[in-house]
Picture 1 (cartoon, rainbow over the protein chains, first blue to last red):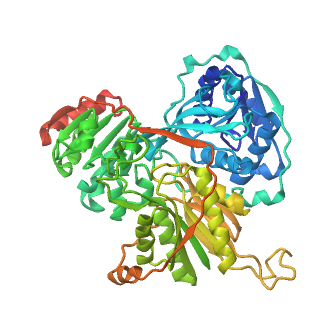
Picture 2 (cartoon, chains in turn blue, brown):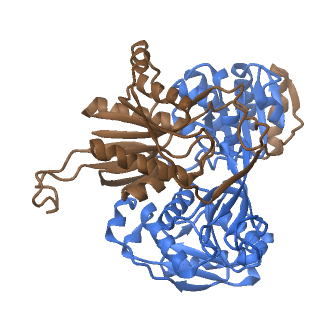
Length: 350
Length: 272
């Protein structure tokens, strides 16, 4: 059985849950195994609400774990719960989304069970051809705890093929799938006729001490469009030249209902806050249009921007990496081109 | 306050990474090396905490002798002690790395006392396993939260405020508040020390070393620990580059001549 960790925030499924379920559906097919879901800290009504989506992704069982410690997200409490569920249900593999929470909970469970954990996989296969691994033959669900994975290194600019071998032949293997490698599946690829899964509570014993890392409070700084969800991002790099230079980018972003992003060089110069940084160590964006102004397109930046559906580059250098990777480019000084684009949009809007 | 920062030497981010002829390692011939960015911020944060409230910062790395450069760099920006857990320079899997770091930390703590705070980078810039800090914290039985972009150390609570827990102790437990970003804001965690945190870039802007710092770092005595641990279950087979997406860039024009076409594109995508 493949167990998919269904990420949720106080009962509400987000994109990570759908990414994991989508990936899980194809992995379960490769394993020739059933796909079951797990919601930690979800009550009956949250599970009921999630059931249709979980079922449409092919999961036939939805396990829930409830405990007073699980009043909100907590990495240690979720990790210990997952570890206990793995021990009780003995899935052949566990899959989560490679999100901040997904990777953290899987690392917690892996640490508690002393099992290997491969983060941010883009391909996972049960392996039956590992030489010298004892009783590893079999394939399918009885793959003997050995798996061949391809996972992301360097934020996606390099790939690693690795074997994941669990020490005990029947121990579960833990994976997370790469962020944004599986976009939520188009709805027509799902099967609503599959019906909701059977909901089944699993009990866990949690030490009260685990509540120490449960979320205490949330602070909302901004509502509305955020960098990861903005339909348009206007990004600026070293070429913007100063903090003040971003005013023109702000104006264009606001006009298009988007957000301003920037490269690491910009945050290192203190021109913009780090929360605006697009890249491997910043935010990953996936807008309909990324307008990249004065950005050379170093690997560190590119891996954060590569999920953009379309890219329009504005750069003085026609050989810049960002220009060659863009769909469209205007060759010129962003300090002239960006205000001119803003003015032209205003003119057309009338 | 005794703070330990666990850091990793990695090729400088931004460079194009090529795979060496063996297919299993990075071709380092033309690469500069640095401290993994999240960890550089962890060192800066530790130094700032001790500058405010006193204490000492120890940096620890697992790697080849060359990783001593990163320990010296940390010393040049204010760290006090450097520890090298010597490896052959090959890439250790996450379980083996965590076992070695745990053993090293236990040995350092047996000699000179518990670290109040242990900081890791959220993930390394190169292999990005997202787990070594968590494994070490679990092995040490300490709380850990990843993705931290803000730390606030709380005053030790006196008996008055301390909900009866401080019975028999002169003072309450030292605590911290850690912030991590969520969409549109942040969430807050609060727990007692000793604790472990996974730090993310953006928590601060790391300083550059001063000339005086550079000179002082040359005198850093690096403690070297020799230890080995059994390998874990993740075995690297091959590194390779993903297929490059070749895009046909359509040049809309030079300067002002491209503006109308650019706006056509924006309009065509239905974004106006």
